[in-house]
Amino acid sequence: MTDLSQLEAGLTAQIAAAADVATLEAMRVGALGKSGSISELLKTLGAMSPDARRERGPLINGLRDRVAAAIAIRKTDLEAAELDARLAAQRVDLSLPSPPERRGRVHPTMQVLDEMIAIFAEMGFGLAEGPDIEDDFHNFTALNFPPKHPAREMHDTFWLPEDERGERKLLRTHTSPVQVRLMRGLNEKLPSWVANGQEPPIRVIVPGRTYRSDSDATHTPMFHQMEGLVIDRAIHMGHLKWTLETFIARYFETPVVETRFRPHHFPFTEPSAEMDVRCERSGAEVKIGQGDDWMEIVGCGMVHPNVLTNCGLDPDVWQGFAFGFGIDRLATLKYGMPDLRDMFASDVRWLDHYGFSAFAQPNPATGLS
Ligand code: PHE
Image 1 (cartoon, rainbow, N blue to C red):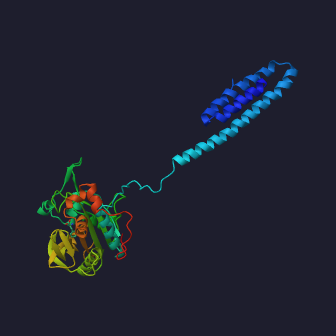
Image 2: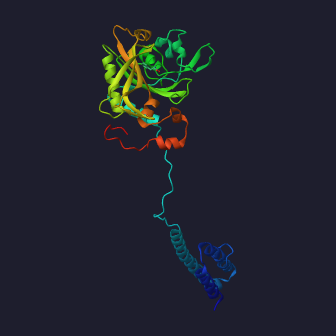
Image 3: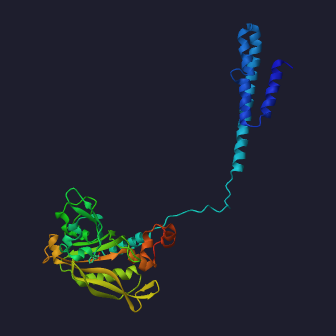
């Protein structure tokens, strides 16, 4: 056997024996790399006599080409085998149970807010918002709270420290200051994110956070209210009663609810009332629309002429009504939460229990999800 055929036999055996791509590559470098066995042979051609080169040249080049081709074929085979092995090892077992998936829940306050907005939207109400940090004028004075009147204390206000102009801002104690912002409308410079003022007629609801220094089973320092305001010509209490009764029946998903208007006092409405609904209480549970009990649901009244005047509207031309719901309280009544404070304790177990799926199907009765 010549030296070349011996070398070729050795390399061919190595190629066949290489069990993986890495071994094959090492072998290729050993033969065809810069100082590989075949490369070294090719280098000897330069020093040969022309006759010798004519004879050896084709032999060495032929050897190089056959070895390179054999390596390439073996490499393709090895790569295919490695891929097959990986696919077999990494096969997905579709029969395995999927890992548990944590899903967020919609907070009951936000769920109820959506329900309320949907119902009022169908009655033609628009939506407005105002700032959480208010001034005395919007929260009290324009709403006809007399200066130094105990009614101001009745709200247990959170006051902010005095600013450089000596003014003390406050966390709004109710959403009623947005009534003022809406009615003063174009007379008032509003930050662009606040409800754009509009001239009457006005028919809006105003949801938002409100704050009072108060904490027990039915009060939290921060809570949510939904204000309602309707201003037009010839608006009377009948409109107020129909609006609230229609809303309550739809919200509690009962065909009729019996209501009762009890005289009350708010500085910004005259007459003022609290609306009660007929209900049945058994323990913590309350059933709306049946039974011998009454439960206070909402404060309301006809917008006080002083408020209209303070907002630049002529009370002889414009009348209106307003109401203020506690959104969280409506949630506890509909969905049976015993303690209002739990709503804002950020306990995920509570939210898992009382929260709503973000992907709920709409209720076929109400069209609400
Ligand atoms: N702002 C009142 C409150 O916080 C509720 C209310 C709103 C009453 C509008 C009458 C009219 O209790």
